[in-house]
Length: 161
Image (cartoon, rainbow, N blue to C red; front, side, top):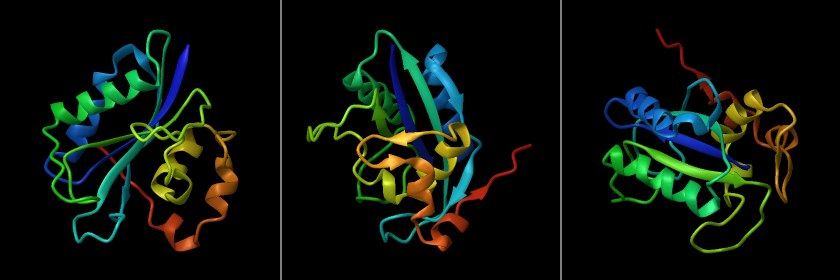
């Protein structure tokens, strides 16, 4: 059984709709989905806040390349364009980790090279899995505790409904 942690974000258009459609696109592979959080943009590009979530997926027939492909298909379904690095987007799906693999493959580096620095990944992941470990980096709780307090405070719950 292959198991992956994916981080999803959206800040253009129907952000909650894009996130919901992306989660649905993974079908029976979805094991758990975090609540949605509102977070400021990361990377220095002036833009709207993001809606983010983390989900855990598992499937015996999907390997790391398959999780990347399925993530890219979800982005394509949301008509994602890649005009500016770290710029606004309808949907961004990052593969954070797959089966504890550590790899520097340039097509899919695992774990995601900046996951340990991103409160918008660590906060929702920790909520899903209090004992989660980012391979090669350590317990997610410890990584989150090492971030600046303001980074963590900027990850705000979104009330839906």
